[in-house]
Image 1 (cartoon, rainbow, N blue to C red):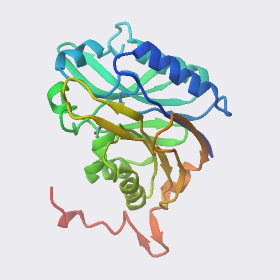
Image 2 (image 1 turned 135 degrees about the horizontal axis):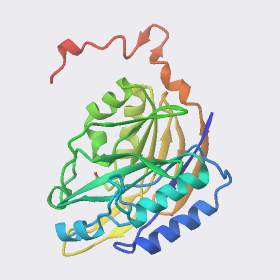
Image 3 (image 1 turned 90 degrees about the horizontal axis):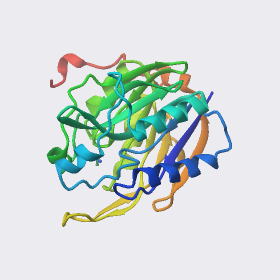
Length: 272
Ligand code: ACM
């Protein structure tokens, strides 16, 4: 069994320090001092509704992977992983030279272990961010392989499937969901791949630069390989969810005794 913590916050756009401090307070209420996995939402400290590429560049942080000084959110995630002794996944804009990505960082032991750049950008994100070119993100951990995907990636079922075929036992899924069908849809992603999903969403609203207002639906959740909602947050409040899961359950791909989803696949019949 591993202990999982999931943060659902309501960032104020551009107030990175204030948002990190609020997340720190939410995390301070946790019962488990050493969760094995902490998942935070997409763009959890910057806010989501960018109105220009320049804004994304300005809020974009160096990941520190090339030896440069990591940004404030990166340092926060690294420090959190040092403090918990576990694995931490959270979303932020990452700047590399003249490019900027909607990314998620995987940190453990106080260090960035992987950076995943979102490969399927949603709506206006296509104007502000560069598209990640892969590979998809699988990281070896003591509880098996941890897969990472970001928000809209979930509606491309190939992403979850590829992570599951690659051996993911748990998929960390930072999101900023506004569409209503995400929470129910992710139940199917977990079931059809027999994998745990840990989806961390934000709450609150943003209305910037004359763009249509966005209302984030919260409902962060953890779903089992059998499709049970093990925990689900409210649609409007900042929350911290904590629970235990057994990642080894993801290794059994049978949906019923004689039907193993992965053995019965017919990839030769599928579109490419
Ligand atoms: C989304 O991809 N943030 C909806």
